[in-house]
Length: 382
Image (tube, rainbow, N blue to C red; front, top):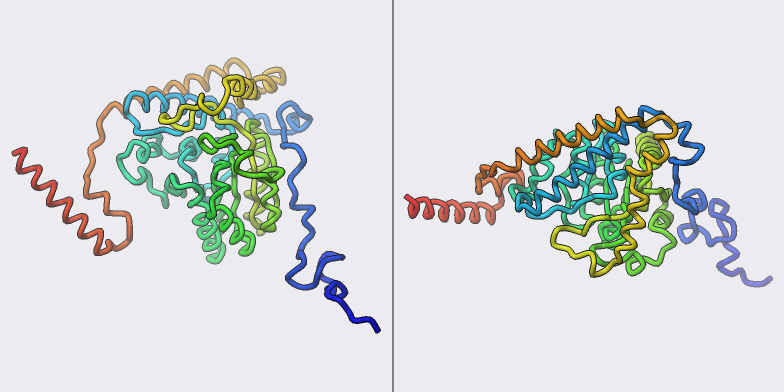
């Protein structure tokens, strides 16, 4: 009798043809693969099946969000903000993410996602406090169910997994949605978060806004994968590929993933193909690494123009809605100008207040040193 080889020891629970046990796949990878082309709704048959009220709300939020980005960029040029990473051109991702969440859900944004934070209802002045340099974060994360803006790349992703898993252990119907850029997918935190989320079957949605560049590095120099959505398969979760400038498609994919997570279906990785029209920040010169023709081409695929192009002929968007959205946007811009004109009143000692629940010896020492320096300055001024 010939000696049996390793290949002859196949387990009935594995995919046929694979090695037994842990060395073989536990599930068929085919259902996890993203579609070959990005999902779109605007301009397709699915548009007529989409709630017109939802489409109008998305449009309104897009217009207000665009004006928010423009005004924040202007405040940076005026020195009212230290830095502002604009999400101009990516507003469909931002507003759809906020709209897809329920009040009890949590949002874990990156530094470019202040529009998503504002769209959740956080006051614009509070949302921009970190970028003004006035405080670690200007809003209460627990009250708003919104984590602080994450400046380090992808560090918010494991936090989202941990919170979602803990909430599920407590029996709470909570979903965590974390937002990243394509550059964040090159960080170890991103991969650790996906692995933990899949293993723990945590109710998390990972939204990657692929805007083409990690500062000046194009995606082709970051990843050789067919798409970033394909990375989901390696961790055992579904990957979705969507047109990130199609607000209706973004809302549909995000809502489906959020409710799938809430019902116990586990995590989802979504790649939204979009574009950063403005520079990385006010400190970046984007002309050094991309051509004007590229930006111009993407402006033709602008999320607001897309909605107007497809929804005006269908009667969903009319002149009244356009005017009302524009007036609301200008009112927000005027309020931002007025509130940012006043210099903030700050307490330097508050720098140490919310770092830890109980201040460490090192922080107490630093706080005492700062207090002594402030007292000395006060004596000199007196």
